Length: 376
Image (cartoon, rainbow, N blue to C red; front, side, top):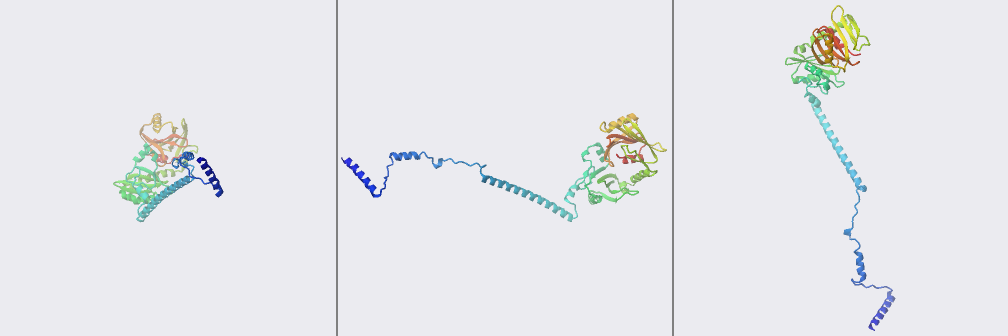
């Protein structure tokens, strides 16, 4: 009965509460009720903040990172370029400063000092003219070049527009430092002197002269230096007078060589197996001079051609040597005969090797022939 009354009172109280504010009052439930347990169970299913996996964003997709990276590379290039330009500018300013100070002191430039410490090929105590180059550098080891150097001749190529006065002034200033004593300079050849600058040292002489944009260095005797090669100049004048004696004549236009010959010489052409040859003889004398083709230049060497020709013509060769003819710039072979002398040379028009020889020795006219004969 009491239980029934309690239920009835509870129901009345609920109805009374509705009437008062029409609101429902919820009382805190105990922690061990089924609803609380269910709610706690559901909370455990959610991951805690510590267990949340952070998704990393790719750097390639991050435009900001790309931009920063580009800016760093750009700045690094700018810094490197600025540093390089700064170093170059410092070097240029240093060079100009040294050159300016050296010029004020009346000395040489830095570049000149470097060349002044280098001797020309074939000589030990002659400095190289600044920025000049040895003409035969690529063929220095050839016998012809070595033979030329052994005779005391060396040739250097000058820069374009270099004047002979600049060359002579340079050696006038620098050669005395190496023990050379200047004798004089001949501006142009005269009746008894060859042009050039002449020096002497310890009983030997030196001639320096500029010709066709080249510097020529030639070892001569002290006496020849003191006389400016008077004897050689006299021989040259004699050869020139040979042509002036009775007018001149020329080889025929079709011939692969050009040469002016005095009128008191006779020229005879003849056809041979290897090509057309020329025989020149002086009227009233037994002197004869020959220009004869031997064959294609690439077929045999000078030595082989000379051996075959001397056996065929029964000529006795007593001496031979290969050299570079400094008037032509071509390689030639000189040889001496028991009765005569001659040379072998290649023609650049038909690429044949020719032999030119005479039946006399130390002949002025033959010297004139080999110095003046040219391809058309």
